Image: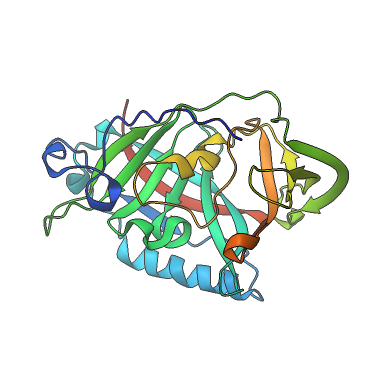
Length: 275
């Protein structure tokens, strides 16, 4: 069984972003702007649906003027240039997409409501995850006509060097991804994972990278209702890219199935306070 490390939240967000009203007096305002990612697969129903969501997002989240943000000199522009896409199978048997944005120089990850965590946290616009375990939430306070605020939740990441004993490599190799956008395919090795209480092992394909993937995988440990449609495993080596999972939960008559699709070029901006 994977180890659990206590969560160390610094702040709790308002409403679905887990904060109390009295803690948002000194909240910092922030804005973002997004361009629809390039070169999407127009033949995919899931891609079309995701692009429609992005269009709605672009219409709603119009960038604020400098005076609305506050002192422009006190903010830092973070430009997310990579879009990582996984496909997942819904309970209705349909394939949909999870989008996660990445800034490659700082290794910041961005999760936003329409394409990442959906309406699991309706008052939260986006979450930026840092490699030090800090998750910054941009949320709308309950009061009407008030600007968005920021709060932070901090997690302690494990730094595992090896897989737990119940992860068993099989030696089978499979390729994932599309090289058309300039990124190479990931070569994934098949693992059988014997989670406690499951009669059959879960099947994973795992690749390796120089990128620290822990901010993505630990999202499921955040407090509150906010969640991704894919619950990635954590407590595995940080440079592991989870390329697919197939798990049958016979007791609940459910099947977990997701797979990595591609990395594509992207342009998405967020403004954060300077540290």
